[in-house]
Length: 287
Length: 288
Image (cartoon, chains in turn purple, blue):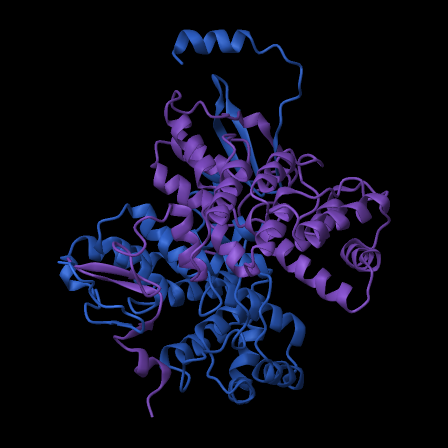
């Protein structure tokens, strides 16, 4: 009997697709040039990730999430900053965007909160079905995370609470300006009344009534709710959004490349705030 | 913006906001008298890098200093140096090196070659994440064989679950090779060599109990397991171990990528007949 490695040597078995050089391309059992040629990029993305052809509203919803929620042209934002630094340092836009996308898999923003929020919504749905209340569930999560009262203002405890409740709260400001425009778009597409969206806002209400004033629903939480209501699994939501910050990072890279060399937030030596060991001499006996 | 505009910008800087700073626990700079943006003295954990350390410290000693904030002793230097040599080049069949070579084969930027190696070498199958998790097992089990056996058997009996995490669910005990048959010679040679050191208490214990642990895991020891034990012996935490494993495996990836840049793309496998597509609809009528 062959080992796994022997069985797969020189042979990749798949249903995802393939390229037939000089002839055609197949994606999930459909010919790209004759059966999928009218799909938008968002439609192709949804089909490639889920294997289901989306309807027009699903394409527009994902397009809106990408356009409104995830590509700010501000180089102060941590993932965008990678693009800007690449541009300022004379690197390439592709390198800057690639690295910036990798950085988007962060704890405090980006893909981890999205994936975490999707998981949290599913967990909340299961617990409600078992008779637990939202109040109990949220209190348990927050108590486990920090073991502190809601009134505490310590930064590290706030960070723990942000990580404990992905989809709620923000590191820079408590209210998320993207909620209203994204909800407006979802309303136009009749996607704003699903059970996950209602659950997300119910959780926000409980948090506010419980004294967690900084834990408003953030865009990752709303994105997860909207995408959950479209039937996407948490992993599919993550995959649909892996590239969604690329626009903002690219804008910042392109902008920085047009500025004077070295002009992107240069820092003087004195701006390093050192808290370490006092000056000392290297011992030479070890070499 | 030209120089004149730059001057205007500086003249308009009248806000009284305090300048934001970078807080550092190990790096300090003193500026040149004529330029506040150029360092005259750089200190790493208190040592003058260019005025004292350069010419005295080896690369491995400086690496240890950067991560630990202290000068290593001779035994620590020997252990980190040995590990760095052992893992510097996993070879062209390793997925992370393969990634760098695939980038090289197409003539991609050199930075992308290394980024490819980092991305692929970061994972839970033979990558840096596996080292991080193996270090977690060392912390959990210490040097107690019964505890290790219970932990490893739990992995064997664990049912696969879908987690809401960016990393895939664990599919094998970290530090062991799920596709291995027996512990390969280079891994045993590395363990023997690195364990011959008076700070290598985890490595010595691993060498002594390797067979029992492999039996409990039902898998042979992997190089990630040796690296995790070495990082424990050097006093690194999980993040330091994960980061160093990423860093120290890059030289081989870089060299193999450069090797591909100098060769024909036809000498690197494309797997021309390697795709076994299960749902091919076949050519459509009218297709070329």
